[in-house]
Length: 359
Image (tube, rainbow, N blue to C red; front, side, top):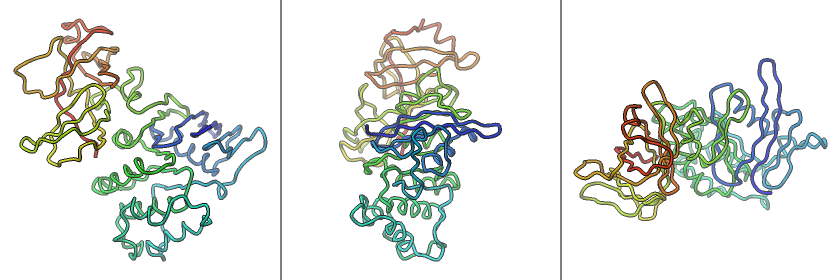
């Protein structure tokens, strides 16, 4: 059985981790939740740094831990890469030396990621002869991730790798993390309490609270489930994946096709036809109409169907919508909901005032 299946129980004074996971064998899965909910403890258990009572872990069909049978693969024998908040590079080595150290851990016959591939994925060619002490925070984390990749892991663990970086350094490293998402044929488990990072990077989302899994599934689905806290509040948003159809240079508008139709969005940067983009649509930027409107400045008006409604805050209602299989949220006043007599199953037109490209 491919993918990652895990069962961990770890009891500490005042805290218990008790969770079961079934994660995809490719792409980025994110553990998301508030500080202290058990995200890092879960990663440490996967790495074998925490021994879970009743623990069980299988990665890509291979059992790494089965406490019921007395089987426990120690950390140094688990083919994984682990990147922490702090890069922890060897200060006496250059970038090349740090990467070479990672390569030495794996016999040549077992290498699945070449040094050249790791360097290219993280954009490190101009830095190879630099000493680690001269690097910026973002550069250090890129080297740390490349060093982890140089061990040819079958599982890559990233424990809040952007938490110690300021906004410019985060913006610098995020595109490289996206490349890992698109080009690596291995599962990546990404821990974060920053929803914008999760929305941008994760294919699969595990929502955690108090040491337990609250919900697990595709990121776009969980972000729009009205029974979960992610789909409420002023920052609630949906994530849509689509492909570039064309770019209008005169008006600086890019057209993106997705399951529910097409979206035109401002973009000064022309993008290649067919490029996959992840888009973020905030619930507060979506209004609804019973009929398609004419004579409006809103570029994106698409047919949709009401899935469900839930009170969001006093006087505010969150409406979950289906657009041909894509999910969207609209945050409306309770008065508007009553005036339109909205109910599950109703056809409506979603008027989308703002769309952001997650890049």
